[in-house]
Length: 115
Length: 115
View 1 (cartoon, each protein chain N blue to C red):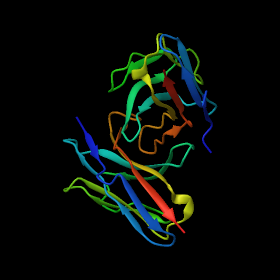
View 2: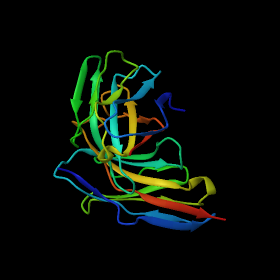
View 3: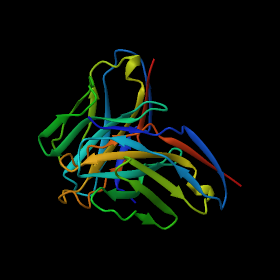
View 4: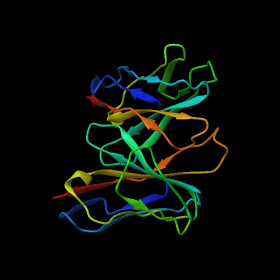
């Protein structure tokens, strides 16, 4: 069974600053996908970024980037130039290649961006 | 924007009532999912469907049931609600694309409170 651990329940960051969210996971699989999802208050959960385990290059999406360390089973998210609209709960998630759509989520990290 | 809708957004009911949480998507996705999310906790998959007349139980045991009579509709039913069913229920859907570019679209969720 896979587990996903997010050790930071809440993080606060000032506008324009950078914040890094940690995520570790445990699996015996070699091929899998990792995701960061964002859930703004009272709004839909949306995909922020995804990483394929067989790719060594870290994924980036505009101000969002990941640091994927496969051997350490670590998948951190960096939010650069934080904006007020980044305030949300962020979930790290894991999916094996034979269980499409069946995600294993972490407990989430609440990010609060302050002016 | 994801075209997946959940109703009601909030529901407060008494113990023993039968309830149905609605989920509809207009994207023609074959795959649909129900996740349960307790406050400050991980999301857990409770049901999924890979197409019409196909339903499976997820990783977390649930007393709820689902049906998939039409592609666009994936309702979740609790025959007799109890306070332990109080939670947020998130519906999601995804395309059948062989996995590599698979992306989950989430609804806004139903916050259920059973008194």
